Image 1 (cartoon, rainbow, N blue to C red):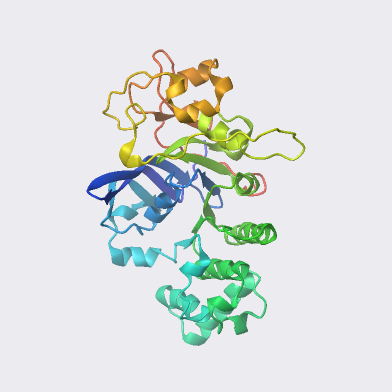
Image 2 (image 1 turned 180 degrees about the vertical axis):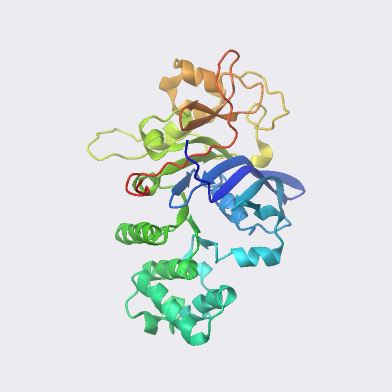
Amino acid sequence: MSTEQPLLTIDDLGVSFMTGGAGVQAVNGVGMTVYPRQTLAVVGESGSGKSVTALSTLKLIPTPPGRYDSGRILFDGSNLLDFSERQMQRIRGNDIAMIFQEPMTSLNPVYTVGDQILEAIFLHQKVNRARAIDIATESLEAVGIAEPRRRLDEYPHQMSGGMRQRIMIAMALACQPRLLLADEPTTALDVTIQAQILELLRTLQTERDMAIMLITHDLGVVAENADVVAVMYAGRIVEYGTVNDIFETPIHPYTHGLLNSMPALGEGRHRLQTVLDVTPDSSRLPAGYTFTPHEQAPRRPIEQFPILSTLVEGRDNPMVRFLFDTAMRAPLLYELKPQHWVACWREDGYDTEQTIRPDLAFRRESAAVAG
């Protein structure tokens, strides 16, 4: 067994928001690990809890209205949820950096690109201005920006969307973080620029031994870049495994629905399969749909679970029946086969070890460390 330790461990994380006097459970019992030089992709529809999980890692959830209800976020063995704001300022942008979804709204339009990169450098590194400018220039050059020294004096509106995204990456990597949180890093970019950005992230990860948590809904991006995949739905992880297992032998019907809704070259289909359900409002989950551990939900036929109706052919599959035909307690993650976890209700007599938090150090061969 490997003695390697994870860089980041999220264990039973619960995050809620108070809206209009009612609590909304955005993240409920999420657990995952990220190892050095590993890319963990977190996938799911909008509203599934992906971004809230990433923002919680840096304690960027505003409190109130947000609240950390439960769990731990361990980085190098220390629980970040116990850190003060001053302690978190030393972590953000230094050990853990984040690329946000929309570069035009994340960059301040009234400051030059150079000013914004230098701010992060001065905050975390004891260098003079001349050295800071050199670091900023090197960062822009590393992400493929032509004439990097001149670009430091330009404003975000003077650059294209692809260049602004590269600027965001340069800002995130200026202080050599060990973990990069990339929240939809290629949103609103054309396909050519997307490929360039993702190739850039892979190259920088290899050069700097950096771990990446990739937040995305694009399964093509996941297939190309991820080592491990966590599929989220309604604030919970419903399936977790290596990228090969998730794409070749998916178990959860929601994962099947996501994969089958993708068009495939060379396959003639009259219509694409769609996921019939949308992520529900967490404040108004119907009875039997809720994941509350103490609620006794009645047995319900598969037709009453909208996400399951996406996999009609699975009704006679005993594994699917095992996963979803009983609802007497909250679904938990079980390791149904080696290195492959699925959220399910445990049927009496089914002998398997329960695992709440997956722990998977797998990397593709190209990303693995020799020896």
